Image (tube, rainbow, N blue to C red; front, side, top):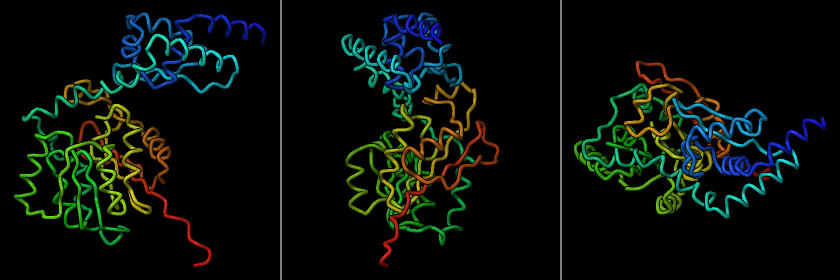
Length: 316
């Protein structure tokens, strides 16, 4: 045990390792992002992080050809002190303050891709077939006052949502795609659909939804893999859902098609356990999490979360 403690002290006595530990505690970061923050090459970052990985202080996760590193929660006073010192070093050199900007850059290619006027909606999918069945389940929906379609794109789901809800807010950050959605709305005659340019975490959207008592349904169909921070996107969506309402996420299962990054994909799918954890961190009850059978490649999955209803008053 004494030898192991001595090894831990030696391991954490290196300033570069302290910086790596601190940055990976701030966010899950790719080797390339760490190289940018530290001003080093990716092979150097991989080499320097290996000892931390071997000691179980940092865990690695693969996303296609990328490797992401994340510090484990400190359970040792020595490691905790090392994290404090590492954050102090990274604060002084400015790298800690740059983490948020570096992570946000993950979405830059996606923004450019969808800002182009000729960026097209993916072909119809099993996810869309699923939502085509929504009218059959309309009697089971707890409320149908408001739906929010986040990342609506060209609006392929709006003709399905519009008859089910009194009001539909369709949100997308691409003006070009919203213009095509407007044309679809006009052609289909959907008077209760409002288009908004923006993202799921926009304050103005939150205010509009709150003024209507929250959303009965928030839908994110093939949106999450474009988000720099998927957990934050799910949390923002969950805040729009009223008590008793639902969040539905349709997205890819893990895959290895690196060509999808050329279409603005930040992530190559999600493990079901990771989606479940996203929902639970957002305080949603997971009521369904299942693959969608169909011809889509990469394969899709659907996760449905419910915002718990307020507890019943015992006096009622």
